Image 1 (cartoon, one colour):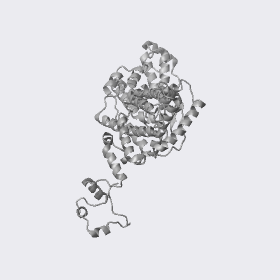
Image 2 (cartoon, helix red, strand yellow):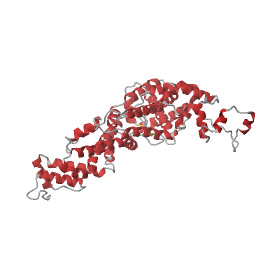
Image 3 (cartoon, helix red, strand yellow):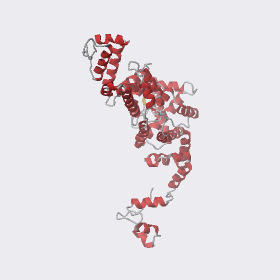
Image 4 (cartoon, rainbow, N blue to C red):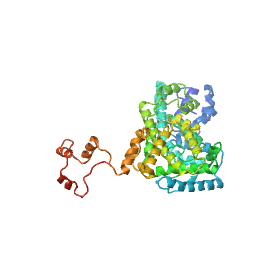
Length: 481
């Protein structure tokens, strides 16, 4: 029985409740005093319910990492949803898709110079997809989860009476755990439901699968093709080709994966919780009834409107996604030109990516970000113009380095990009301007206003040509490529 905290007489139900909270916040393990729980009936609290709440919160507390977020809970929730139907991959499905992948690899090698994958493609169950992709989802969602956990701790502290401040401050980590665990549970539900929608590893545009791994989910592939009225073998070939193209691109351009993931996480770090909405919620928050907080997190009600900086970051991300998926679409179109139903399948895939499924929309509410390539048609038109002008090899070389990749301006007007690539194909150097000259002198270590700069502006004499080599014998040419 708890000690009398009032100094005399039996402790009140309120005293017992506070003592239970102190035990929980202090990390006390094991069972709570049944007699203490029974006296909570004086506060109209069901002792059995409170026992369950205490155990649930302690379980979340023990499973949380240093940020207060229980990612194990997210994984359990996602796997529970993904494995509900209990359907695996049949031998027939695996054989059919393996054959589709083999033929798709041959066709794709005719349409792109980017090399084949080192690992064979995989056919995954929904649960296996969750296991493979959850680390990336965790990385993308962690900044928002941390923001919600921090804001919840702050809001509850501000709402607590003065005489309870010490207790609330001592319970800071557990308060973070409440918010973080609820967020992790919602993320688990979203990823679990998303596992029922995605057809392949690159289906949502971002590189979720391990590097160099292509995959198809046969359960969802069958659902996707059910209403298309397209022969299943043609659909399998198209989906396999598109998936291989996506995986090959990220395997080839090693910098691209980090570049894209960084843009997503940078956006997520800019997400801040709407403190007014959270403080309003904190005034009526009941730890024994977390459903209201759960609904607020799930609906995105705690995330305010995007700032101008976030809108700019989102535009950059959408352009990058469109550039990636536009290339994938053009390469897939060229590789599957033999398929009679290729155009119909391509349009279905494009519409599906533009609209997104219920789980993808739920992800947008959860982290404030919809991962959509809104400019995919324009980006595909740009890649088609480049392919027609200079061919696959020069086109694919644009992925070799980050500074070669087409920009948003190139998507708006591909003509300048095409003209530059055609000039390079003819062996012509790009036109120099004053900025190019200034940059070249700077890289050469010359003073901007020094005599070397003055000499560089004078016409060269006949004798100058003999000295136009450095000590190594190489031409002294600092012009940018």
